[in-house]
Image (tube, rainbow, N blue to C red; front, side, top):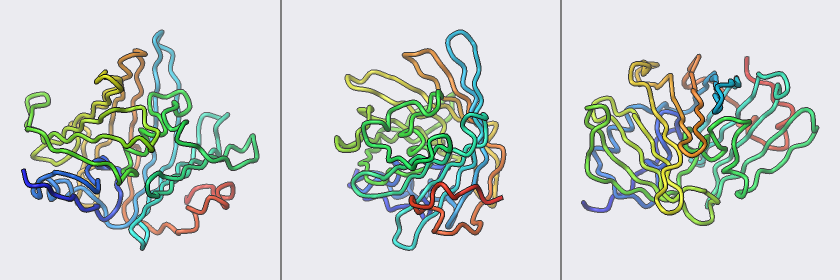
Length: 266
């Protein structure tokens, strides 16, 4: 295959994985075109529920609002505002796309401080869920510098899929050696993602429920994900309760010095 640099989608978006936006990629133009079908123009907002289950069946619930925006300089920002549980209410997480490593900030009302999350912590669990901070960046397309390689097509549950492999850089602080994404060739929506640690050990698998992919504003949006931690035998289900595209979102909410003042947009 002729090397192809996959250009960034118009918005860094929640509906595709960032490995498809790498700067050094060997991805066929028709695959890029397929993925671009499911991207918004400028902004997106989601209301999500994270339901985590541990080994003994105990559950933990998180509710958050996610806001994304593509800036004029072609970088992007994400802010998560946590509404539940009570001990996390009002917590804000901010990710600003930078090269070679993103900036990430956290504000917890109980601490009255804005703290920087370093690359050493990005692999940490996000509030007891099976999603790490890095996983959140990946899910919402915030890692644009990762090289991508297209592999031979495969099948997921009998459906033909494109296969793309991303390999995080050393400076990223990622715990993953490689991340393999499988995209449905008909809908152009991600179906499964495998996360491999050193030694090609499979650590996590993210599944997208194809029956919960719904049209929003002319694009197909997954509304249900399941993340399984293979080593720890735990699971987190992510349900999208609401999606809004291309809504007004001011650049100022992505200013880390103002993070403690942000209280959501509705």
